[in-house]
Image (tube, rainbow, N blue to C red; front, side, top):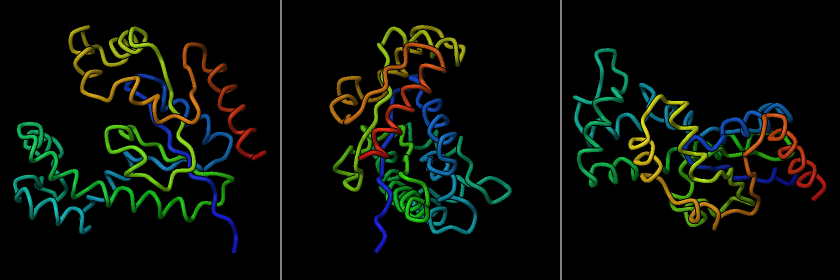
Length: 203
């Protein structure tokens, strides 16, 4: 039986540069990246059991006129009540994992990068025991805040709150097998990805 490609978890805090790292991996091996954000949208498309489960739990008012999920309405519900957020996560996270793993299973690349922004917050290795390695894209908090303010046009106070809502830097780094420190140019980031790519393919 053919050996399955290694499964690499990729994560990083907001504005760390994780998306740029994912693009660099995909440029080397097109199709190797499976995106959790894409999965989260796919599992609640019209006609899916995921959407049916959300409607059964939260009511038809979370649907727009076109029958698609009204994300703003759902967000308002779940962020107003922590128990609603946990209920939504319990519905969607297993479906997101299954969607991602099905795509990973079908991949023909040397390894598969599972791009999981909330890997640490979502239970880490306990939730994702199938991961062979975890890569964390890391930047100091001050750099993260500056980049977030520039990227999203938010003030320092909001940037701090957005960062504080995620896992801490230390919690993410505790999961890491490999760390990409993103303090330089896109070329430097690409070179760091290249070094990991070479090491993994040799292994």
